[in-house]
Each structure stands twice: as C-alpha cells, then as structure tokens.
Image (cartoon, rainbow, N blue to C red):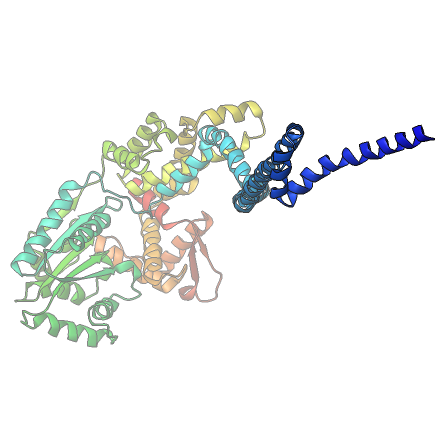
Length: 522
C-alpha cells in the first residue's frame, strides 16, 4: 500500500512538474514577458527548453506576418490587376470580340458579300474586258453609228482651214473697224458651209477681246413664208413680236439710225435661195442694211448656187454684195477619207482602210457630199450588224466575228449597191427633165411648209418658179398632171384621188436627201 501511495505521489509530482513549464512559457510569452525573465533567471536548466519555445514562438508570429504580407501583396496585386485590367482587357475583348464578330459578320454578310461580289466582279472583269475586246464588235459598231451621224457635231472640222480663216478674219476686221459688211458663201450641199460658220461663232464667243455682238441665225427651210424672216430677226434682236410689215419698218429704222452705242449684229442667213420673192425686197434689204453708215450689221449669206446673185437678184442687189464672196468646193476623196477617220478616232479598227477609200472615192466621183459619205458608212455598219446577228447562231462564225471587229468590204459593197443601184434612184436619174423639176418642186414645198402632204396647185406654182429660174419650158396644169401620174406609177410619189385635180394631195414616197442625191448624179 505504501508503495502504491509513493507511486501515486510520484505520478502526481511528475504530472504537476511536466505541464507547468510547458504551459507557463506560452502563457508568459503571450501574456507577460516578466514572468519569462524571472523563470529563466531562476531555472537555468530549463532555459534551453524555454528558449527553444520562444524561438519557435517568434517564428510563428514572424512566419505569419510574412505569409500574410505575401498573401496581401498577392491579393492586392490581384485586386489591382483585376481593377485595372478588366476595363482594358474587357474593352479590347469586347472590341475584338464585337468588332471581329460584328465586322466579319458585316464583312461576311454585307461587306464581304459586296467585297466578294466586287472581288468576283474584279475577277470577272478581265473576262468582261476580254469579252469587250472580242465582243467589242457590237459596242464599237454602235458607237460608230452615233459618231457617223450627220446630226452629231464633231470636235474639229478638217479640210476647211482656209475657209475658216477667211470668214474669221473678215468678221474680225469688221468688228475692229466698226463697219458693217456682207459675205456671200456658196457651195454644193454637204461641203461644210454651215458647220464652218458655226465654228467661227464658237471661236468669237470664246474670245473676250472683241466688241459685244448679237448673233442671229435665220434658216430659209424653217420659215413658212419668206417675209417671216423680218419677224424672226426682230424677235431675236428686241424680243418683240410684230407683223412682217411692221417688223420690216422697225428693222429699217434700226439699221438706218447712226447711233454708235448700238452693239454689233451678226446675221447668219442659211438657204438664202428660199427667201426669193417677185420683187426681191427681202434680199435687197438684207444686203443693203450693212452698207449704211454705223449700221454695225454683218451679214453672212449661204446658198448652194455660185451664180445666185446674177440669176435671181436684180442688178442693184448683186452690186450690194460686191466682191466679198467665198466658194466651198466639193470634197476630194482624200478629204472625205480624213473626215471619216476624224469621226472614228479610237474606232479606226471598225473599218478596213480599203473600205474607207472605196466609199470616199465613190462619193467624190458623184457629188463630193460629206453627208452622203457618212450615210454610206452608217449603212455599211448596219449591214455588218445584220450579218453578225444572222451568223450568231453558228459558234464557228460567232468566234470569227468576235475576233474580227471591222466592217468588211462585202458590207461596204452591199451598202453601195443599195444606194447607187437602187431602183428609185435609177428611175430618178433616168427621168425626163420635167419629172425631175416636179420632184424638186415637191421637195421645195415640203421644206417651206414642213408638212409631208402638198396640194397640186402649190406644187404647180413652185414648178413654174423653178422653170422660170432655170429657163425651161413651163407646162400647163394638164401636162403637169400627167407627169404626176407617171411618177405615181413609179411609186416615187403618192397622188390622192380627188375630183378636182388642182387640190389633189401629193406625198413623197422617197426621202428628200435621196432625191437630191439622185439629181446630182444625173
């Protein structure tokens, strides 16, 4: 029992001795450092254990702050990065995600479709260009038809340089001197008279060194009555509309007044021979007004016949014209060829050189009319188009025509045959003199009235005037009626059936240009 009691005491002592030193230093370190110093001074043997414990304890607090600082630094850096990085990272991501996603969608949906179409078109354009080069036959022929039209105004007038300088110098001298004058320009149709005068007008209007002038143009073909030229001139000059007699009086007073403040008036009269009357008052006024003092009137008169003043006008009218005359001779074949080639700048491959020479030589041998040469070229182009359209079914012929973009000699020969060897033209060339004069009378009435139909009595009056002018025999109404029925059977004109032969309606069954061309050939 005593041994057991001793063992229990030892155990109690051991138990009391072992927990006290371990727990005290922790408590002393955590709670009071003074206790640690007292026990360390008192117990030297237990200092290593106690020193080991404090060494361990500071490591924990030191380790914990180091760990916390790293965590805090890492956390702070992460938070800073999160705070700073999201806007730049998210915005570019949105931009990159939105713009690539949207822009590619746009580019793939709208723009890529357009760009792809453009790229596809760009890839196809060389094929189209190649097709244009091979298929340019159609487009080049269409463009050649537009340029070869007689109504289209060319950029320059070849082969009329000397006539252009003569007209320009004449008007320039009159404008500088301050005097009026008159120039009579003659030549067969299609020799470039009207085009040359209009080119002079463009050059005068482009230069500002000349005095101010008023340009008035009168065309005899556009007047229903010769006396309407007074009304037209007064309306263009002052803007007033009066009767022909009142307009003639006011114009006479205007050009008789010696007022130096009046501006110059350049009067361009085309188709002068259609303004003839019995007393020739219109022609006398037109050529008398420029000779008056300080009239400041320059008259440019154009007619087809060179000897019109001597044939049609009275001696006093012919004397007013004086020696200021200019003649336009018919074109030679070299000039006609240069005119056609100037129209076809950039399209010279459309025609063969031999084809152009053949057309120009044929026209120059007959009349030298540039308009007729252009018409033949247009007809040759149209025949080439028809042959191309007819051969479009065959692949071999189509490939050959795609490679060839020229009007061949065959189409030119066919066009020349249609024009020169047509039955109507041959009939007019071989017609008697009175029948040719009758056709001229019908054309003249059509030019004056502008109506396709004409009364027999009006044609008869024009027929008598032409016969008197040319010095031919004047037929009666019965004889002229037989002439009209002969032309009707040849299908050159159409005569309406009527009871009274004087008021029968007559209509042309052929163009006026073809009649004039056939009459020149005869």
